Image (cartoon, rainbow, N blue to C red):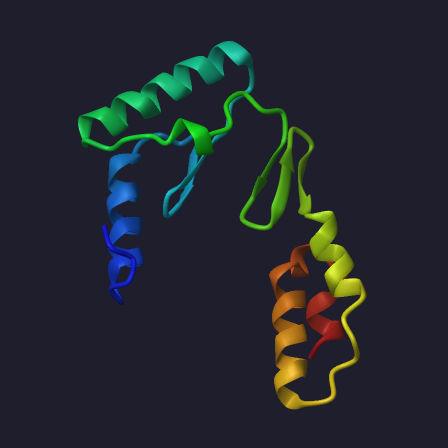
Length: 129
């Protein structure tokens, strides 16, 4: 699917949601698919189910871009581990070192960055209102 078309991402997101429906251990965002498993054996079963589903819908997997059986993974700007998630260290550094905004546009940009990670900031809602 050509993602140059205006509605292509949302169309593909709906499609991949349909493809992986009923697989509660899968998190998907466009062509990024994360499989959450409690054990190696469970992970093997989950991966097989996802592969079968992809095959059923005629989808191919680029194995050179795939990471299998990892204990932690970078996903959509977060580091996901068995303990939970946290912002990527380099993103924290960028936010921490962000220069004081001089313009409304720069302030909005900074607030957008902070908003992305607000769940990790104590009292973020009251601090930035």
